[in-house]
Image 1 (cartoon, rainbow, N blue to C red):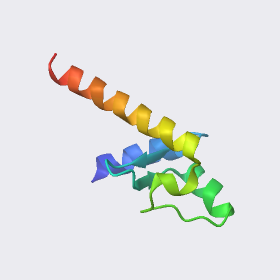
Image 2: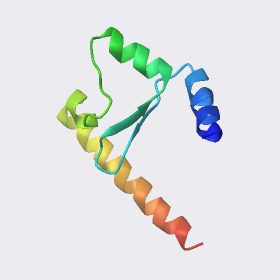
Image 3: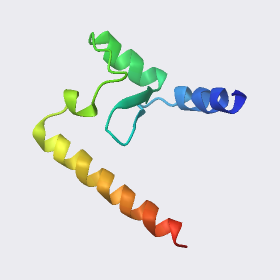
Image 4: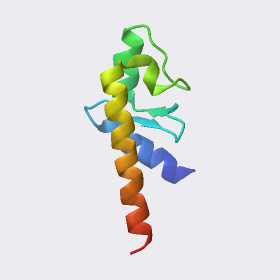
Length: 79
């Protein structure tokens, strides 16, 4: 558990919004900067689909990027 706290602390120290989603595109982590940014806008995004806050053009980019990451992951599994 301590390792997770360390990683969270590192991610919270970044001055950028960092958001993790699972394989179903559901938001599972937001660093402090992202939480502050979206909560100020009155949005609690934890547990919601990443697509709920993006337009169609962005959704397509997100899906394409995710598919490319999956291809890279498979490629590295065979190395």
